[in-house]
Image 1 (cartoon, rainbow, N blue to C red):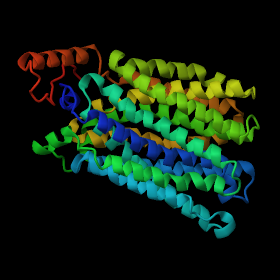
Image 2 (cartoon, rainbow, N blue to C red; image 1 turned 30 degrees about the vertical axis):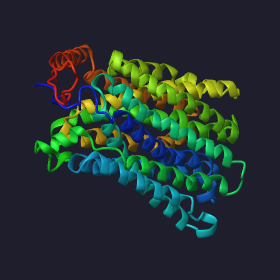
Image 3 (tube, rainbow, N blue to C red; image 1 turned 45 degrees about the horizontal axis):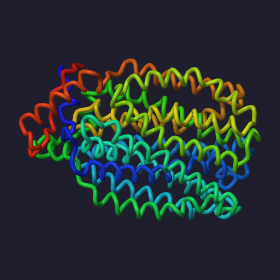
Image 4 (cartoon, rainbow, N blue to C red; image 1 turned 90 degrees about the horizontal axis):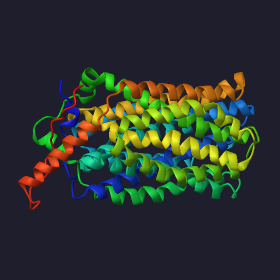
Length: 460
């Protein structure tokens, strides 16, 4: 059958607000990542002592990473809720609401009592707030990426969505810069300050996102009477294969990140390969490089397609799995920084850059929010508990256990890329050129409204 997923892509030359929407969505991604990923840093360096002080170091680390995993486990539920609302009431309301919920939950973490003051109630409250964080973050990505994708020009879907995806390393950088500063404060303030400071970012994000217009594709779907009553049911029934493929694609990126970054900072600290300041400095360098890497990789997919970049990156990840740990085991700071930069800027950022354009193109417009969100967030359950699993593997096998797990995740991503169709290959690029040429010939003054529809020569 013809590929319906590419029949609604937004205006062929983009909307006048495309850049503003991309920046607004990207700023939201920065804030959400600051909140959500900052928790990973705190879990690796502080929460074991603050919330599980009676346990031995390994058990405390496991318990801390378990609370991290709970938030990831909640993300698919958030993705289902956010995807359903995105297809039913619009992308923009999901963007604003998820940001408010995430901001309040993160601020609350900074106010939580520790085990020393509240006993067993402290970790219970931590888990509860973490679940709320997961729900909000699960709902956020689909709305942000689709708003950007559906406003962007056809020829630059990767580049524009790359702005949103680059918001994640920006958030990672900001979170770890604050942790790098706060670690010198000592005591509980070292981990409380980064969470409390997030309130400032949330206020800025709400101001920006409130001015972003609704997706033109959603408006078309609504005006044509194509709103689906149960989009999540329909997308599972009709597009379950793409959901499974998307989960596989995401595992290589997000679960791979959980090994190479989230677990790695704990590994460096626990094995005395680097102190907290050195570890956070290395992570900040990797995040700074990752901002430009993500945008660059995403832009590259507009020229070569989404699929080739994914295949080659996953192959590299398989090869890099063992050397990644061998390099950091030297304890040399320069090699530690280089390893984190490679693991993040290549193994993670290249895949994230490709996903921004690829995932929306796999699903029909009327169920795109539900399909993309579900595929994107279900994998979070695996990545969320990966640091926990990796810690267990380390106790049984040493560093080879985490290294092999990273290689397995890359192999899963390779399989998924091989069985997922290319959505921006030579045929789609040629079709876009013909569409633009026809519009320019029919309207040399450029006064006509660009089409939001196109039939794709690609078949599925």
